Length: 253
Image (cartoon, rainbow, N blue to C red; front, side, top):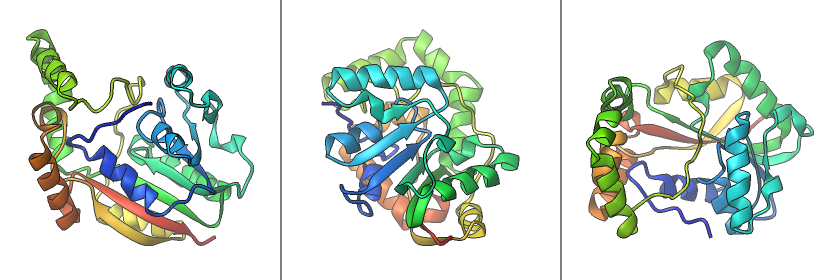
C-alpha cells in the first residue's frame, strides 16, 4: 500500500475535499498528475476509477514502477495529452496545483480542452497556491535564494527527514514529481474564481487550504498534529489569505 501521511501543506485534507464530491462508479482524471502518488494512487487504493496523465514522461514512468510494486494498475498512468481521450468522457477532472504552471496565453485553450473532455455538468476541481501568500514568501528563501541547498549541505534536512521517517511523520517515501516546473503565474482567490466563471463554470464550493506552508514549514512542522490542525483551521477560516485555494466547479457548457 502506498501510504501518504498528513503534512503542513494539508495534502490529506485536499484529498478529502475531492472525495466529498465523487463516487466510485464515476470515471475521473488527474490532469498533471506527476508520479500519481499523492492523489491517483490514493483514490485507486480506495476503489475509485481514475486515470492520471502528465506530459513529463520520466515522472509517469517512475509512477508506473511504483504502482506495479504496490499492485496498482500502471496503465492508469499515461504520458499523453488530454486530447488522447474522447470528448464528454469524464465525470470529474482534478487539476490540482497545475494552472500556476501554465502561461496566461495558454490557459484558455487548456481549460477549453478540459471542458470538451468533461461530461455536461461534470465536476472540475481546481487547486492553486495563493500567488501572494505564505508559500510564495517562503519559496523566495527556500528555493530562489538556495536555502534548501544550504540545509542539505549542513545535513539539517537529512536529520529532520530521518526523524520524521522513524516517527511516521514523513509525508511519503516517493516523490510527487521529478519534473522541474516553476510557477509562471500568480493567482488570488478572486482571480481564479473569475477565470473559472469566464469559462462558464459554476463555483459550487470554495475553501482556503492552510494558512502557511513551504520548505521551512514542512521541515519543522509536518507531523506535529496540533500545528497542522491549527494551520488547517486558519486556512479554512481566512480563505482569501490562505496559502492556497480549493474550488469545486460545475461544467455548464
